[in-house]
Length: 588
Ligand code: COA
Image (cartoon, rainbow, N blue to C red; front, side, top):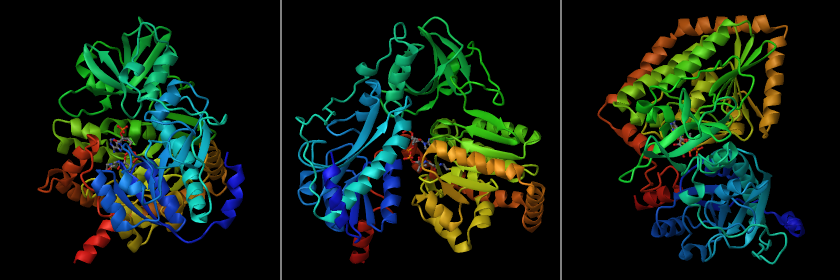
């Protein structure tokens, strides 16, 4: 569709643009676009979509050349799009219009889907088209599609659209349904009625499709033990089954429910609460009182020859390299998960492998302590304490590994404590389009632990330590490599990344110099320990964390509450809304 316009990009201007992001939140897509557009030299400020007058005010203050809406839940007000060119990122193919775009694409079983960048006008998603990208669909959750395919396609489409806008001569294409190549259509929002599961009739595939299409938000409303819950985080089960609808097993966080032709595991539930917000939690936590007679069907993380079952920690071994996967929902790690992961890790260190690769999860490497689980505890302060200590125990086990070399392989994004967990490894490699949030401050000025005061200065200089910890912005893997925070980044595609990681790990394991490398590591650890004991770093960090958890300043508890209950933002934090900081400076 856009072939005839490619020549116009020849006129691309190199001047930077003032771009205002108008977004519901600074989510993974907004963060990725932020780092990519900053890299192109653009000047970006961010405003959360709070209400029309705030949006108008932001545009007037910043006077942007262009407004980009990476993730919006409402229309852009007319007073804004009439004056400023506004690009809306729609997670659908050209012609697709309306909410629940990805939900319908999954439910309808489309083989191919896409992202369109269109110009806001009076009709929702019907504006002129500036760029579009397509991708093949995977049978997976909506959240996973969003974090991988949608983010990649949207990044490519937005960069193209911005270049076309800069050219000054590109004419966007109007939406014309009479064209045979426009396959998308207008659709209505998906309702719970469209998502509902009939356990006596629906096949495993149909049930998985429904839960996948609702993953992240809003979940599939269903009934369990007479109560209403939203279901999330489902996968198939190869062997277990029973009468359709019965809960046949539990395993760590998940319950296994029989279908007409097998069973599905459900990892997370959110109780339907008509009077207020509810928390999304592990299914076995939510239903614990009902599950006493349900058998716990465990598995061996070291021997799992098939993947159609529920597993959150598992190993693969090839030669003298062991790959440890930890696929925790949303990358959040509660105290028990940290302990299970540490136990599994320590078992791997007892084997004769030479290299242990920490693979994390495919979508998120790790996002640190489990804030929902903490919020749900009788004492969130005590649970925060337990969780950070469990994280620290895991990090300690990795730092003090003295018979293997370790690699952190970040296939997916990492945030807060998750980033510092990765720095515990001897080598840190990331996929090229990974985004890191190596700071804790956004969670109510949390000081952070995970031995960051030891791990960060090992990699970057003093002023970098300060700026990384103070700066609340996401950074790209490329920036992280440039600063020395990580060793290297390569490959955008996950399979290519994994192949390269295997090559690197095998090369280290078979290197004739391996014994010397190991000796060097052991000596360095001894020197570091003599200079300042790990326990001392831990104590100092935990003293600060104790203040965060138990002190007078409740900022961490307030920020966590807002985060887990997804309380809409009342204002945009000043570090994001640069235009508002400028305004305050003028007033002073
Ligand atoms: N605990 C519990 N849930 C978490 C989590 C954590 N540490 N980190 C992320 N999540 C959940 C989010 O609530 C969201 O849940 P949903 O499925 O109900 O929507 C989901 O993971 C995805 O998070 P989202 O913020 O939409 O992803 P993102 O890629 O846009 O942003 C982060 C990633 C890391 C920047 C952001 O999730 C974050 O700030 N997380 C908190 C990190 C933190 O402070 N950890 C504690 C200190 S160690």
